[in-house]
Image (cartoon, rainbow, N blue to C red; front, side, top):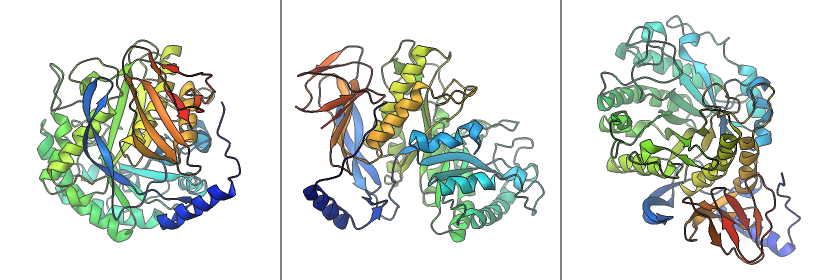
Length: 477
């Protein structure tokens, strides 16, 4: 794969760079920090159909996100792909770091021996930013006996706050340096009576009341975390939002996706910093085809369905006056029912699209699930047997090469083509990421002198015009 090699800048360009840094008022790693952005509504056109997208709005009093690229690991070990995270170009690392039921199996007594402190220290030393997921209610604190992923009993919420105080104080500073705390995983799922990796806070099929009860937890947890570390950032547990409750497919109950509204209805808005959510696409049966009909009213159309989820979440937040709350997609991938070469290639196409969209839709970050994962729809970037990189690994790496320092400019205007335009903040080049928005090939005329690359960073020869299909291309000039 051809990676970018940035040559020594000319004196004039260097002067402009210094000027840009001076104007920005701050640097990270020698590069200007872009402000974290949220969004305002804008109706635009994707291919031939109108959709609602969002324009950037600077978000005050929130630290800027250096890059959107993230991955999930099951463990902070070589066999889980931990040693290849820097290679692939990720910054965020989502990790189920802390199991409350193990650390405080006996009320009032904390046992930290099961925590992978050495792995957390290595992550910090490598410059990775951990999103620490806190999961699992101990038996003595369970509202529903035997449901470890379920809600905390009301009279134990203060115990949870005390646990979080001790947890954050212990791990907030170097050599751990953990600042991002996610409270649970997929709480918008029904009660499970096992040790499920899903969250499961929805009681009696009522997402509003259940979200409201989760808000009661936040009202105690958030002040405790902030008192222990004012720099801490709190994410709600990543919402599954399996399908669109405003436009559900026939026969599909999508009311669980109202969980966030339940949180806000019960006054939970001030008690979290970021909305964490999950967004997967499905393989469409042919190389390059992807869809998620649960977010397109049951229709099978060529889409990653990120825009639909972002629109829904933003609409709920705006309804309650929290339109500037940032969004973080903490699980994404394209799922494969069978581990075929066509599906692997489609995953690679999805990787390029997914991270261009993450920037265009102003996400804080987007976390690929996972570095290693052959047990759940084959979404891993690495082969579990020998850690051999899959096509998606190389496509993710290429996306990171091109877009880690990119600033979003706007949508692409080519007919029949979806895509986004960026500017690299390190060398000021423009980068377009484009792909066909339908089943047809489309001919476009890139700017004269542009270099074109495929999803793996290979040079694409062209003269005058180029054809665009399902496979995304990078146009650099």
